[in-house]
Length: 266
Image (cartoon, rainbow, N blue to C red):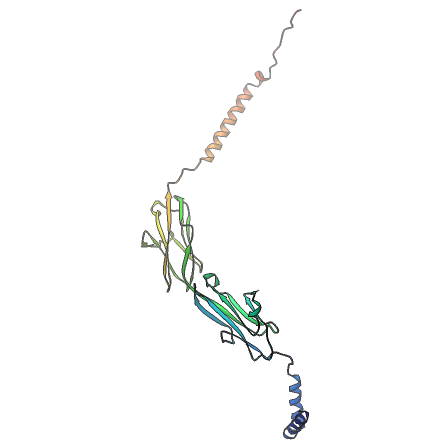
C-alpha cells in the first residue's frame, strides 16, 4: 500500500511538475478533517420542506441516516423542545407520529438531527388546513347612546373571507355609524352611540374553500337610564349646610347661656 502511494505521488510529481504538485498537496492537507459525511433525510427529503396536511389525520415523519460508516444516533425536536424517543427508535432511523393533527399544530416545526453533529439536520413545517373556527361574546345588553363592539374571533387555514349580517341581511355599513376592524384572528364591528334601531341579531360569516361558518351575536339596546343629577345634589347639600349654619349662628346666645340656680335653704 505504501509503495502504491509513493508511486502515485511520483507520477503526479512528473505529470504536474513540482510547483503544481506542492499546491495540490497543500490543498489536500488543508481540507477539514473529521467532518461527518453522513446526511439525514425526512420522508426521503434532504432539504427543509413544508408538509401540507388537513386536520384530524395522522402524520408520520421518518428520519434516516444516509452515507454513514457507523451507527448514528438521531434526535427529534418539536420547535426548540426535544422529543422523548424510545430506545429502539434512535439509531440510524427514527420516526415521530403526530396524531391526530389539530389546528394547534399549524406552523409547528419538527427537526431531525444527528447527535454527533447537529448541524446535519432536516426540518419539516406543518401547514395544517382546517375550516373556520369562530368564538366570541355573543350576547350583549347595552344602554342607548353607549358604544358597543361585537368581536368575532376566527381561526382558519386557508384564511377566510369575513362579513357581517344583520337579521339575515347583509349589513349596510353607514359612515360614522359602523366601524370594521379585521386582523388575521378577529373581525370586529363597532357601533358608537347605539340606537334602538340597532337592536337585533348580527351574524359573523366566515367563508373559506373548505366551509362557510356562521356565528350569531345578539344585541339588546335598552332605554337610557336618566343620570343622577350630581350638580343639583351638591347645590342642595350646600343650601342645607348654610341654612343650618345660619340657624346655629342666630341662636348662639341662647345655646351658650348658662342657667342660674337658686341656693336651696337647709
